[in-house]
Image (tube, rainbow, N blue to C red; front, side):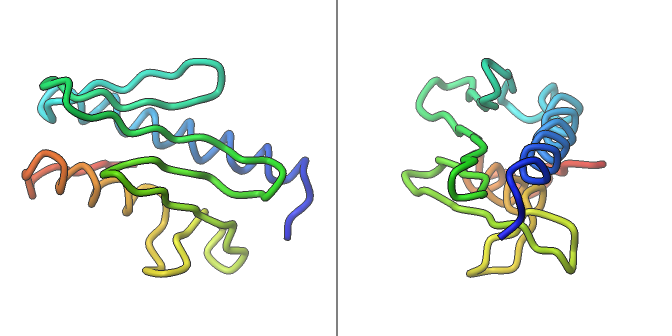
Length: 112
C-alpha cells in the first residue's frame, strides 16, 4: 500500500485530470461535472442519476459510485494509475465505459 502523502498527491492528480477530461466532453455528453470539497460529481441532464468520485485516504483507494454500484480503484504501481482490479481498467477508461452505459452512447470519449 502506498503511503498517505503519495496517495493524496496521486489521487488529486488523477481526479483533476479526470475532471478536465469530463469538462471537455460534457457539452456533447448530456452530463455536467462539478467538484465540491474534493468530491467530483457527474450530474446527468435527465436528473435520474449521479456519479460520485471520492478519494478514500484510509484505504488508499478512489471510489466511484455509479450505476447503483461501488467501484474501488487501487493504485497500480506498474501502470502508475488507479485501476479496478477486477477488470484492469484505469480511472479514465472505467469512467468512459460507465458514461457510455449510463447514456447509452458509445461515442463518448474522455481525452487526456
